[in-house]
Length: 442
Image (cartoon, rainbow, N blue to C red; front, side, top):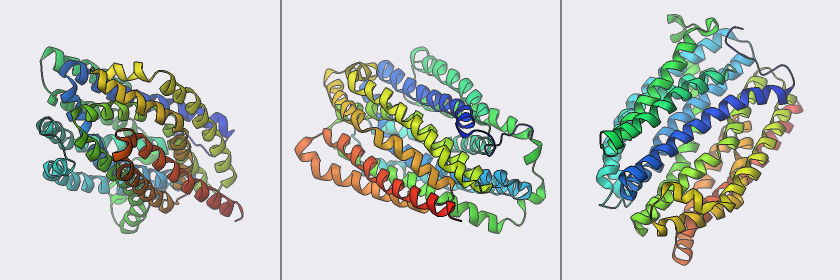
């Protein structure tokens, strides 16, 4: 099929690696321009504006993570219909996903802009940075439609086996992002609004490139009839998408509560935590990408009823996650000071970040392996356990930060991450083996 790629035939390791590396480069480039944003803001505007932008991270993940979870949930269904060679349902699922995404854009844009200030107050945001956090947040949430558009278009392409086009899109948007961040901050002397505006435009560029590719695929060229009578399809998509979206948002709630504890410690702690969060997100990307890979691979093979290939695919993706841990975990442990100094200016903030990076570097294998087993469950159309594990993850994260902050201070943030990752890994590991064994007996 032109412009689409099946993952149901051929040697799993070869197919997965061919699909994985463009996705990895896409994810890494996204993190690079996120870190470039942070570095440019930190070095160009100072630690307080950096803290203001970083303070928005958990709240942004709460909203954007919900949308991304929905898109990923929709994509699992799309990949299953593609794997089953069911063209009619494939087109209807894409049409229904588009309609639902439009509704989500209207609802979440309105709510996020309306509730932004109250949420920042609840998070104990310092008066020193709240103005910049509001300005940055209003622009980012105002451009929510761009993020949803890119997530949906890229997820559909990946469901059809195309991981290259999203990579090409991110190349262009990353170049634009870094260049124009420098133009706004160092040339035009803007505040935090500059990076926010550039981020929204970058997402629009990525979305446009992916959309153009989708329009060329004859297999999914939609007509008006594909948008009609989709009541059952809406329910099926939401049944798979909402648990994945809720999992992301529940995880974000835990992060927001941790952020509120950090904010109460002071702006220096907020800046250090912001830099550390950026590195955690960057260094988990290879394993996270292996999770996204197995989700698509499992989805297509689940639709094709080739369950033995799912287990083979999980082995390959687990190996990728293990290699990622060895390489990047070591980097966090051996060079924490150098990493921290790339984003932060103050010696105190750098010392805080060093301790966090070492502790999380030792245990980051837990979240690396979590991505693989959780995504495999989702690809097999079993989203409930991953969602419940997200709740468990939130409870562990909150419990640790509440119990240990008084005794170990800022270090409790690292312990909270490790506890959350480990608990969720155990739940999803058990669920995966239960589901795959049950499928193979059918």
